[in-house]
Length: 133
Image (cartoon, rainbow, N blue to C red; front, side):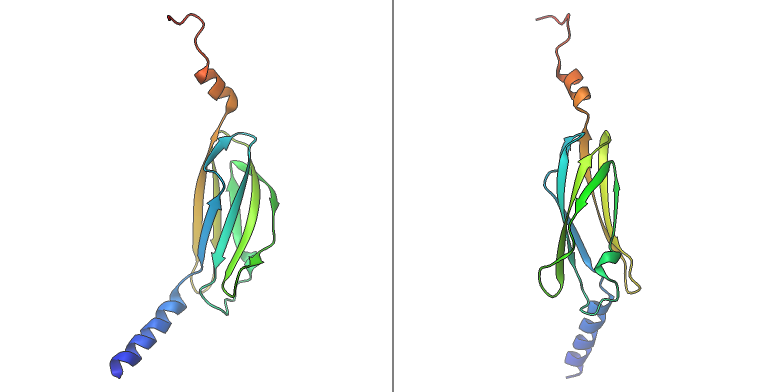
C-alpha cells in the first residue's frame, strides 16, 4: 500500500513539473527566396489549469516575414493548433522559434528552413560559356 501511495505521489509530482509540449510542422523544409511556407504549430498543455494564456506563446521568426497567422484552434481539452504563413526573404536559412515561459517550467521548439537564392541557383546550374564538351 505504501508503494502504491508513493508511486501515485511521484506521478503527480512528475506531471506538475512537466512543461507544455510544442511541435512545429512546416509544409516544406526548404524553398526559394520569395516562396510562401505554411507552418502548423501544435501545443499540448500539460496542466489543465495552466496559468499562461495561449496568446503568451512567443513566436520569433528570422530569415522570413510573417504574412498571416490564425487564432489558436482548440483540438481537445489539452491540444491546440495554429497555422502561420511565412515568405522566405533571406538567403541561407529561416528560423522559427516557438516558446512558452511559465513559472512552472518553460519550453521551446525551433526549426530551420533552408532558403535558396534563385539567382544563385541559376548561376550554379548554368553551363560555362567555354566549357569543353
